[in-house]
Image (cartoon, rainbow, N blue to C red; front, side, top):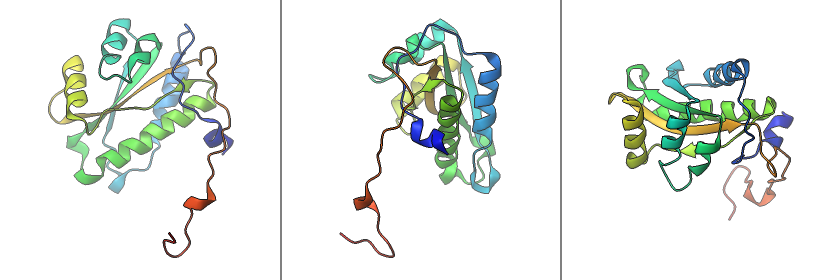
Length: 170
């Protein structure tokens, strides 16, 4: 459980590729996520080509670091697998968190870049990858070995004032 406390959002990366076996471990971790009615709506686009990384870096003001990452994983929800359509984003969020935790465990750095439900970002990603309407972009995760000044390290975020027992005490 220590990895939960160590994981940080890493936005700068070394110029070093991520090994294929680590990419597979990231994807395996994602697919172990809990899913409503076990619908598992996820699909993944593994991006290593600089041309596509550059395009992904332009989807928002907050995605610039993607251009410098050796790897990005784009998470896509497939409507054909959504038996409980209202829960797909929760399923995708669980898969995303698993990738972030596995990244830290493997000595990598990653950051969650939100896409859904922002239609403009979803549309841009759909256009970049030629996605059909039934495929819904959820997020982009740039991944790499942490760059200078970046590391997964413990930062205590515990705040007992946010905990309420039995009822909400304001």
